[in-house]
Length: 158
Image 1 (spheres, one colour):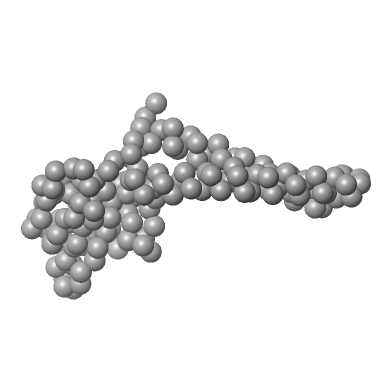
Image 2 (image 1 turned 30 degrees about the vertical axis):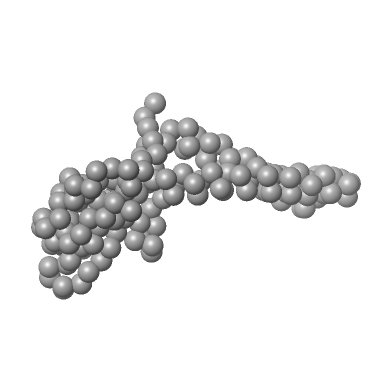
């Protein structure tokens, strides 16, 4: 089976969510189902059906997280040699050569990506263009809105 890259913080977040789903949500939902059963006829019991739906969603998410953690290859970029090369997990400061605007991205796994927090997926066009490049290199990112030219200002292994 294929291993998928994941940062240390991404793994910690998934483990935290898994813990919450198993230790807090699962017992809460089980209790809600038991209480709804006490109300009688299950065919017309909306509370029961809602609780069962929550249980189904919760168990599905637990299985999904366990699968992701089982197939994760956790990469701790802080232990890597600081070569100035862009690799998975690095934080990159980019200078847009057209607008002189600076933007900072961190390359993370597919499930960790959040553009609002400047966390970009390893499979995104910008990450694919950056991987393997070094500080000072100029990169052309083929974006849906057109090509964007960036200069790699700084690569941080944090």
